[in-house]
Amino acid sequence: MTLNRLLTVALLALAPLAAAPAAAEGPATLTVTFTVTDAPTGQIMLSLYDNEAAHDRGGKPVAQAAVPVQQGQAVATSPGLAPGRYAIKAFHDIDGDGKMGMTPFGMPTEPFAFSNNAQAVGGPAPWSASNFAVDGPAAATSITIR
Amino acid sequence: MMLDRRELFSRALAAGLGASLPAEALAAGLAAAAQPQWALALGDVAADIAPRGLTRLHGRLPADLVGTLYRNGPALFRRGDTAVNHWFDGDGLVRAFACHDGGVQLQARFVDTPKRRIETAAGRIVQPGFATPARPGAQVGSADDTNAANTHVIAAGGRLLALWEAGSATAMDMATLATIGPVAFRPDLKGMPFLAHPKVEASGRIWNIGLSGKHAYVYRLSAGGALEAGQMIKLPAASYCHDFTMAARHLIIVLQPWLHEKASLPFSTGMVWRPEQGTRVLVIDKDDLTRQRLFELPALFFFHLGDGWEEADGTIHFDGAFDSSPLFAVEGAPALVEGRYPRSERPMLRLVSLHPDGRARLRDAGITAEFPRNPGGHDGPRPTFHVGGYQPGRPFARSIGRWDWQAGRGQAHDFGAHQIVEEFVPAGPWLIGTTINLKARATELHMMRADRLTDGPVASFRADVALPHSFHGSWLAA
Ligand SMILES: [Fe+2]
Image (cartoon, rainbow over all chains, first blue to last red; front, side):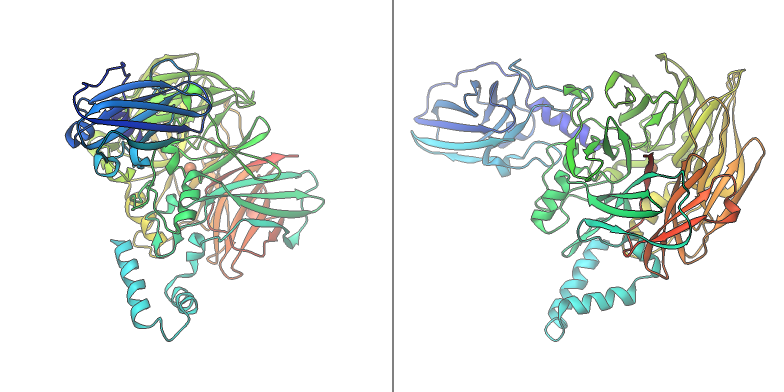
């Protein structure tokens, strides 16, 4: 029951995403490769954060995207990033309705994951566990959503 | 605090003495010296129990008692230098006692939950629970990652459902006890809380609730375990409910003043006892869940309620095992894991009567009782079978009783100070259930005539293993 409430908070941070192109200013490009395990269909919806405050306390992501899943994989590319630390929250929108599926108690029913494959512990993984370096034109990371 | 001490102790042991004696022998010797006999009830089962026959102690298996008694209860509390903080947080072990051809076969398997997989890989207790904190390495993506599946087991739709309360039912194969996986009654109900005490109508239809704060989700399932309807209702209080009850036409949710006030892990740290708020009883019309009535009682604490029945004038009666505060849940049950018994349990059998004029009345049987079970049907008063004989100095029950509210009297059989008596369930004219014999250090299975408990068991069988105290189970006639 406690978990329900804590994870509801997690969900709010994964609110429906509109494709929002990043401001193309910086010299770095990030490629994120997702591997999904539940179903080979649908899309990945992700939010990219560039600071701890926004990530951990429901602030604005620096970029958002929806990328299709093909043969169990999806690739998102975010150009124009300033070099620095970033973190990602993502979920597998299996039914492709553009929303995180929810139970009547507001709990996620579609699988979600965080960068570094950081674990959720009764809420979204914190920035301290999920942040990683984006430092050049070919930065890359991969996330498994199970 | 308890774990810190445990960890410090084992470190001290390793540093100071471990070099001169084999560590395992040392630990075993210390455990045997320090633990009371009853600690067998919270012992660890290392692995699944392969099928084996029980030894007949006396009597004969009744010819019409053919079927399987399934039981569930926590059976692994410690890993490496860690332990769970509460009796309710051990891994669920489902046991099957198959009765046929005059004999009994036992097999038992742990429910293969995400919690168990994560902790087996870690070699430590890491997942949070009812009162166990999350430790480094915890993975909690959903409530089901903390699901111990350790409270009850029922049969529905040709499979077993191992039940907990804050997450999904877990399906298991009836013959092999292999875990099939968590049950989503509908895709959007994945991972929803589902109490461990579903109520079954004479038709086989199953009702249950799942709770989150001041909301309850009401499940109506077919006899085969398929969802017929589900509906959310609002509750007047965010009470802890381990159980609810049902009469012919009503669902009854008893809202005790142990309130969930804070979102924190583990669960029990967010609970506050507010006796000044009293206990409220919400009565819900099964045909229209929005038709509700509220009754008021003094502050009561309970885990378990008996089945309800209704009189022609609309009066509703149900009984339960009521205590005066949650101290056993908060202090008593955690200490049991450490082999300590700082607080006596005094669950008392009491009858709640809800009158059409809005008054609620309490009546006392005057006996200690827990794990109430009724023979089924909600169209009139039924006897309540229960464990009892709670005494200071040792935890757990030692007798089986039967109470008849109409007659205002009961009968009981005392198994003795060397027996820990677990829940007995009705099986036609019989009662069947398990005990832990502390002298023989073995689990026993007993059959009794439901109308003549004072005769004692008509037959008793003994396993070659002592399984820890189970909570609840179901008899499934062959
Ligand atoms: Fe229970």
